[in-house]
Length: 441
Ligand SMILES: *Cc1c(COP(=O)(O)O)cnc(C)c1O
Image (cartoon, rainbow, N blue to C red; front, side, top):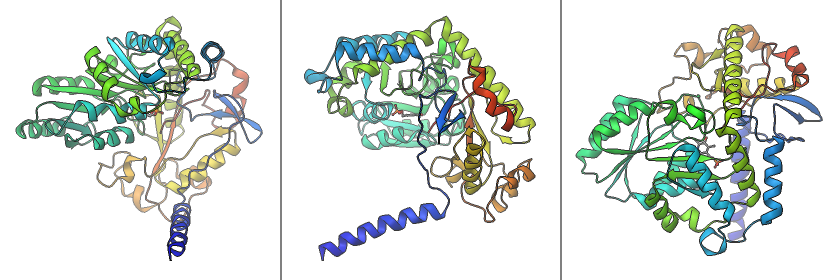
């Protein structure tokens, strides 16, 4: 009897997988045989990389790599302990100081990932007496973190300030003790930068705190790459972020906040209390990445990043592709069809360009509740296979006959390599693209 039920379970798993596959939504793992960088080795050949979150090109940087090795030599593989039991090394304190100083905060707390930082921030700080007002397109980890807290929850439409104000009013009318507004600093699927200045004004008006997740901003947006809040010229109460993107690309997360908040989180945040301390190698690499990003070299890397993004954007627009507007180096290329996006990504890989098709559950257009802004609101997007400005081109990539329910093909531009030899593949394919880029989840 039990055995039969277990067999049914495995059948159900297989059926679900088959369903994902049938919809053309399978996400394959492509194996890379080199360091992360503008050019990577895939299937035995060098291809241009438009997919990593390696905004400043530091993930494969020799200095960042060596700093990790040095830290590992000094401190070993790790602490075999959580921080508060027997796992706080000098290098952890050094990294907390460095990230806090870089972003202009008094203190910081480290986590194994930004996912954990977002999972750990709300529950200890906000109770049923409080309210969390969260952007509808916030990262999955913020959504999970909010779920773990007992606070009242309000959701406002993505970057819709009128809706945010309505929700703040509601929360105030509901008698909330404290209100916290939670938002991504830059939204990873469409590259839109959060309206942190307007959020600041509303927060002041309604006496709310602000938490910004700057995973797609730390290191490259705003003055010295301090992030979206610096880009918008305002201060916020909490910044969560990652060392896994622009700041070296290894892994690890953090929360920057006032010392009292950090102290309380160190007493109460469950991912901090019940998960191992960050590995020394990760700390060493992250420290070196912060040093580079915070200095003059960081300014040069950021200038290069945005020059690349502008070049990619203008050349792709000229070639007739449908792009979402914006200034962030994430530059989504809209195809209107999930299967087409997968096929096009596969074909581009053959041509020496590494991109990935993005669709449900990441793409906003695939979420019925959200405004379908990444779809052009023309009938063509839903009712026919790709009819962006370049239908002939799109068809030649091999489109499906049946329209699919997801739409997004997302590329983003990032580092131009200073190794021009790596770019030859680009010239024969997407002539205008030189450089590698980044694409987040
Ligand atoms: C990548 C990302 C995360 C997760 O970061 P990790 O350090 O890899 O866990 C969280 N929030 C946002 C907005 C992200 O883009």
